[in-house]
Image (cartoon, rainbow, N blue to C red):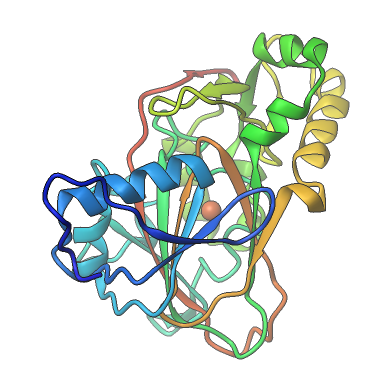
Length: 295
Ligand SMILES: [Fe+2]
């Protein structure tokens, strides 16, 4: 498919399920093409149903990635993590283990615990589109879980409990943040104070309810950390059971787009760190959410 669609017909994409719980591969769409609105609409429909979409064999530089991602909404300029965006393209976050300025990149261990992107900000990311430019021959996988399905599988009683909670997100719980330059980390804390978001989100397009609790949650608002911990642990463990997970084994030129409102993900350190892993992310700006709380 090169971006044309029959006039007056609903377009049907060729989809291959990636796992039982979530994810589909979209076959035969060239994302660097000037895609018709009908194609974008069909992608959005598939995305709302499957939560993550995979497109193999794409050739996307920063310009093309930005142009494609923009078709789905406004892009975040990554002001929450200003040190890691591309200077030439603030809409692109670089996640890489290449040397930058003669030093190991601070993003080399990004995403090592289960999370939803930018959950520690006042505009949690609606969605992310991650492009694999280079990867080690083995590993560097990303796992995704379905938070709408996790919510759906809770008992009615537990649903009512989590419906009533706000989860406090703390950037300090980002895995590996302790390895980064202390001055930059202090700035990240200043930009991103602890913030409470509803523990259940309602998707604005699909109306689906989804659990919104992750390993970056320190407590529930109005509860102590000790009171909160068993429930945070239970919900994270429940959501990330293997049968609720898709594990993506990247190939160069893969583009995976995921909905941060209905999924979590974790980037695995299952590769030789002396081999290059170089990824580019465009982030779709989410709605304003949450309220800042005391640390
Ligand atoms: Fe992430």
